[in-house]
Length: 126
Image (cartoon, rainbow, N blue to C red; front, side, top):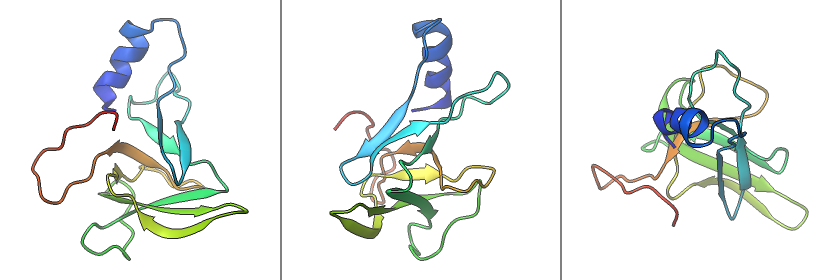
């Protein structure tokens, strides 16, 4: 979801209602958007459902290298539940910009489909 659509949804499409962007997949579950303050930018920043899921943003060409905050890369997900453990799985269609400020949990922003072979990728519900 782009910052422009987030602003449009909050101010024009759903005026007066709380709009909560979410991102998820089968391995992680749903990551919710951080609550937006009145002075926050319209960036959509997702928090994974901790402690069972943790995300990092890594270099697509060097998946062992975590990108610096503010950089762009590919989402790497670790999932741990009583029944299941999936370490360091690179999301097949995930791409994210690491957030500007570090917090105790990893965050992803501007998540969109990942493609190494195409210049543009169609986004939407798959």
